Image 1: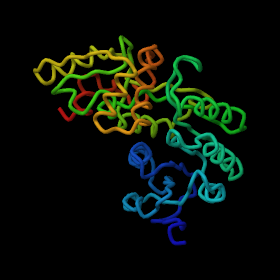
Image 2 (image 1 turned 90 degrees about the vertical axis):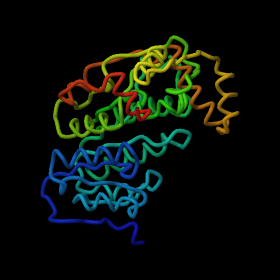
Image 3 (image 1 turned 30 degrees about the vertical axis):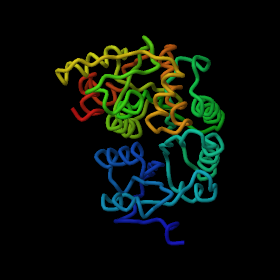
Image 4 (image 1 turned 120 degrees about the horizontal axis):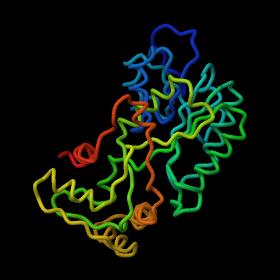
Length: 303
């Protein structure tokens, strides 16, 4: 099928290539666009299930290859001649571990040297696990460590761009309630995480390590409300609520129950302190301080 053919632009480089999965998703696409600012586009490969959707990347000189986490043979073919893979984790509530296992085994078979995996930050394996995410992250990390491949595990924080999903798109105007209690969390934008990921892919020193990437500080949701008030000049109130009340409120807004429960799990984990952790690695990779709370809120709520 035509969609299964690699799209190639320009001369083929003799250098080993870096492949990024999830090329049409927010994170993978942003990593690719950052990579071509650092290394020749001829050394960058994008993997996508829908190569037609990835055509804008071809215009940047990036080679696009078909690959599907559930199609092992497609992965082996996609990884040919690749040295490093940036593995964007599969979506929650899919068979994430089976998909990640396919990637890791195919990488070994294709001769890939190094796999970078995007996990979610956690203080430990037991504290307030996120349903549909944490268990498969832990299992994937263990697979990587036993695979014989060089690995880097990136632990991402809560995505700042997704804050409106947790506290509401109108939080800056109407205030908000959430099941986050007095818990604290760190955030970072997709753009900064992608830039850091591209930097990490082109540097040495991160082999066989776990790397926590976040803004370098944590905030409570009262501080988030105060930040929104500061930026809007309005009174913005934060009301901690129970998991049950949060789910009921989201259902009343028309959210599917499964999505409401999933979001409530993040709130519960924050309340229990599972994300109360920060580190300097993002600043080091960016070469500058990550966005502060005001910058994060401006981005998230278009203020």
